[in-house]
Image (cartoon, rainbow, N blue to C red; front, side):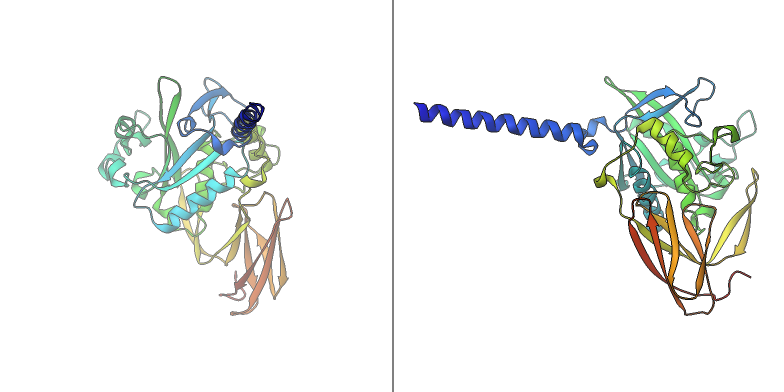
Length: 348
């Protein structure tokens, strides 16, 4: 009898321990939130440029996390840039950003109303975003979260990207949000278009265009005319909404990727006149923890910090030379990249 009681005690203690472990995991790991809890939004008061609705002084924030898709027919580079910006923001903020990849059903054409609708104007003479998107379809089919799509330039009303808050609908237990992010074909064909994706995702997380009075450092990813790199201002505002991640397992490894060729420089705003200019090649950093420092470890080349995103132009002496470049983030992650010089002496 005593042995049986001891056996029952061991089983009972084992069950209690399992419950405690499960409870601890649910409390300490933000990625364990139930599927139904993702894509829920709530209103919060404005803070600096976390202020989508300036009239009512409020913005929206995601509660536990948000799922982020691209249209099914998006090309590989488009897909990778969305994945990179998702992982960049996911490493910084205290909710889970879930990159879902290509949507199994929605293609560009299936949620696009047609180019002929791009010419419609509202009472202010603008071409509103909602003429382009099949808003009712997405609501009717209960799409939740954020979906990125490439959009023809003629449907962008001189913009290179925009975030459209299609709306919020209420379920019996929560509010769900539907957002559409459009990236212009001009930006997609620009090898440095990564900053446009980051700018628009920042809007989707609750940030608006700031005024000069709202900035400390003078730079921000949501600059309306020329997005700068992700700045301490941006991190402060994002942390107001979501808190910091403070989790090593949420830290996306530091990654470097190269660019080369021409880029389109926005010469005037808001008309959005594009000037194609020969530029030099270079590298960009993503992941790790902002800010980054880059330097040349080996080879005859120099780096020039770029204004947009976290990129450096690489200026070499002779075609074919190889420069070893190292980048260090703020928590001492180090990544190196061997870049072959394609146009020695550029830029002129």
